Image 1 (tube, rainbow, N blue to C red):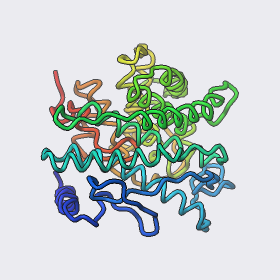
Image 2 (image 1 turned 180 degrees about the vertical axis):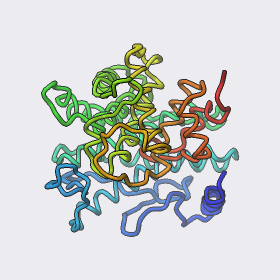
Image 3 (image 1 turned 30 degrees about the horizontal axis):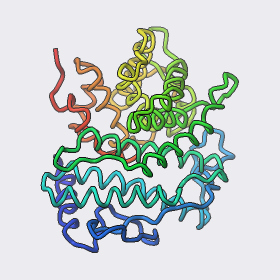
Image 4 (image 1 turned 90 degrees about the horizontal axis):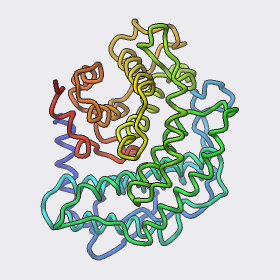
Length: 369
């Protein structure tokens, strides 16, 4: 574990025993409330209003890679509240997994149920008064929340089990139903902008299906997955593949390729278990995309000339896709080379549900023969 991650873990542990300190940092100005005597934290207040939120990118830029210079205060406050909430849910789940003591785990569960229950009871995030970015925020939130809940259902102990309550289940189902309605039309063959937004919606639906044991939610998710893999374009050798709508993001192309690969890797990891085994062609396409993304990080001069500009560095957390992918296929590969080059420090992406290593331990074992 790196020094920074060790210090962060120690800090989180020390904060947990202070009744008024947040276990997951909440930005100043985000409203919070107490939820129960068993939870030593205040949780983010449910957001039930409109989702008319603007994109952070200047929409006059065709590549959608230029940040807006001015952002309105109200929508930014709404986004901050929603993002703080999903990170807090993920933080409570990861706190449980990071501690073995009954008192710590009991407190983590109380806080997690307090956070989920309060937003479920309020019907939060269900407004249909939503812009494109508002729709995106809803599905990103569902992806994070449902992954955290599903992860803890799988990994919690018999002594301190986590199970979704009836209202929590109903709320996640309502969110998934809304995401289905918003993203199903984008599967139309004439829709040109099918991209990372859809891939994240696909994972949000599939992980909700697994958390609720309601497979029907996953059907659209894997239709999205199939469409995504069919979008991968390849060089003449078939060794390198890319997603055209992501490489169109100018200097952010490799950031968006990695961003898109996270839900695709998660969907691939669970495809067979969900009755959607990948074909040989799909596996080959996914491997070619992985090779391209790895080359972009480790040997960019070897790439075909599809990237229009010099690329911005990709933060390590966007390589979280390595964990489910290496768990799916633990044989030596370029993905292993990248994982080792990053010293394994790729875990903890909150949008993907936080820590994934407990779910996908193969990466910690090293390549298998």
